[in-house]
Amino acid sequence: MEFLNIFLDEMNENLNKAINLLKEYLETRNPLIIKELHRIYHTLKGSAGLVGMHNFGKFMHELESAFKEKLNDVLDEKFVARVIKISNELMNKRSDLTEKEISYYKNILLNEELIEGTMAYLNQENISIEEMEKFYSILLKAENDILNNRVNSALKNIKNLRIQLQKTIENEQFVLLKDIIKSFENLIFQEAIFNNKKVNFIIDVENIKIEKEDANLIKNILIHIVKNSIAHGIENPEYRKKVGKDEKGNLKIKSYIKNNMIYLEVSDDGYGLNIEAIKNKAKQLGYDSVNPLDVIFYPGFSIKEKVDQSSGRGVGLDAVKAFAEFKGGDVKVETEKGKGTKFIVKFKAKATSKKVLVLNRDNNIFSISSDDIIKLINKPEVIDNKINYNNQLFEIIDFGKNNINFCVICKNNVAVIYDEIKGYFETRIVPSEDKRFLGFAKSIFTYPIPIISIKNIPKNNNIKGRKKKRVLILDDSIVSRYVISKLIKSSGYDIIESSCGKEALDKKDYDAAIVDVELPDISGYEVVKFIKEKNPDIPVIILSTKSDPEEIKKGLSSGANAYVLKGDKIEKIIILLKKFLGDDNN
Image (cartoon, rainbow, N blue to C red; front, top):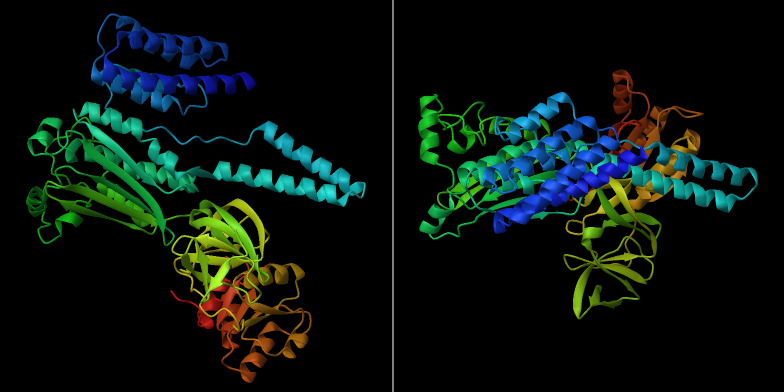
């Protein structure tokens, strides 16, 4: 296994070097580059045999032979593009080639396979035995420390284990969005050559991680749009110069997250869509009353009379729309004749990963996305209820009433007040329906941490004298009370806790209540009735494991404003609280 990993690293390094040399050759036509490429593929052939990847070695021999025949020749541009495609896909292989794969790559090399094929798969690595043994070793150390009453040492080892496990899970589950988009560079290069175009590739992507499942979806969507932009959107260099454009067309991929949706924008500065041709084709098919920018997403719709080599197969625009809609999103297109076309695809992010700074302010735990942070300040200067930084006044976000000793200077002219830094973490983000939060950070503590949206959360111009709303938490489980209390406090509320129904009946001065159904003395339903009879305006949320429709009906009939299952996302409680207490500014 160790030798195989060394080979795979060497393989990726050499294949990446080969791709760069192939691109350099198209610029310089330096014949020495052909000799170097011949040497690279010869080296890979020998190394593959030593680690038992015999089929890989067999195909490297094919590549070596192809370059040996051309040592005293000039490389054809389309041959170069085919080798780039092959090398790019092989970089993602973690096992030997199958006979079917050898045949597929040989056909591409010999120009017998349509070029679009399948783009490189996302690397699906499993946790290695070495990593598992490392985790087990840390666990044994912690166990030994506990047996010998070395509590602090045990806690240190457990914390170390948690951090390493969290990092491993993140790497297994997530991939950088920027890396997904950058992987298109070689595809665009090869497509430009096959279509006799010159293309400048521009990337504008936020530095976030997304789940690998969503990443595969993004690739499927982008392949079709990118290939069509090059084949049918961007003009050839001669025409572009004739109409006063740069001979190189611009193809831009932009991606970002907004309101829990992943946005993909693919734009070019080419012809623009042929609206008249689309209308004529739509009329032939009986779609003359349909908007031409909608009809292009109909299954099977095309204005091409014949399939071409570059983009005749694979995912069509109808499938792109189906992908997006399946994920709770949509796709639209903007186009202008002679100016270009932009496709905008959006779909719900299943989950993302971000680095966040977790803070404590007056026992309220919350976090800020690293993307929003400019600087951390000690003893900031307050002028007219604003923070003065570099002679500029920043609006204050403050979840406490204590003195201001520390703040985070953020984008959007905002300063966030805090008392203590709990840590800086990369964590899994679960979307929030509340616009004041970017989402909830999971896997840091036992409860989710809200990530505030510095753009949407209300600013505090009048810091002193604000009274927090109080929430009664009634649950006989210590763990349930702890998790719910932490979540509610981190959202800016005070809490009152109770473990039994009769005790809860004596509690006063609270603005909302969260009540478990199964209590040691009286039923949670009876508690709800008592609260509502005493003060009908107090919102009550039942939190229960009972999912039977009759139980839910019984809970709502008792006067509860909402019935939440303990298996639901816990963040739902915060969303409902804010709604019932009039704190949601959605």
